[in-house]
Length: 246
Image (tube, rainbow, N blue to C red; front, side):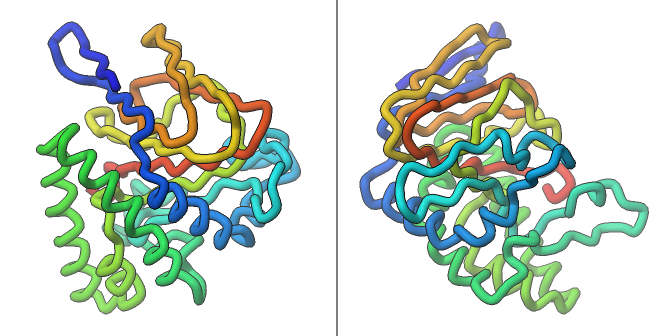
């Protein structure tokens, strides 16, 4: 385990290998397999949109049941292009949760969600409590607005994070995540049957072993990061916050 500290002695990165117990990894694997239809539909075969769902950035599966793709799961957020709408505060349930299996998907994610919430409590207590307050207020607001689906999903959402990106067999070129608050710590958790991977943090000049069971946390907006795996299957759950909601 390690942390990276900036010139002001503030922790800007947490690195925890073997952070995920076999039970958490099993939950992540089973939940991701059950999302296969959503993951399959997420992949764009033409060069439209951005690289995150471009078909050429996904490797074919090596194991039965694995479906390459990338989806966002959030009980309350703004759809792309609507974060700064003039219509006021009108968040929605993410597209992946607008279906019959929405509640079961969230229930399947609860143990990993609780783990990353506990990790944020240690890594950044102020952000943790701010996120708890936001979650409570969103629950009250959705009930007052009569948004029954959102309210129901928020009641069972076990994470203090806005949402999670579920990525399966995706190559991630060097990038930042511009929608994440600069002061926030995203948490990435990774499982799979690949043998070795390296996370490159180019503007920090650091390479990290990114093996199954790892947890890495940093500001995705400030730290440039990229990962490539050439063999085996890799599943990443990236937990994120959104300024537009918090």
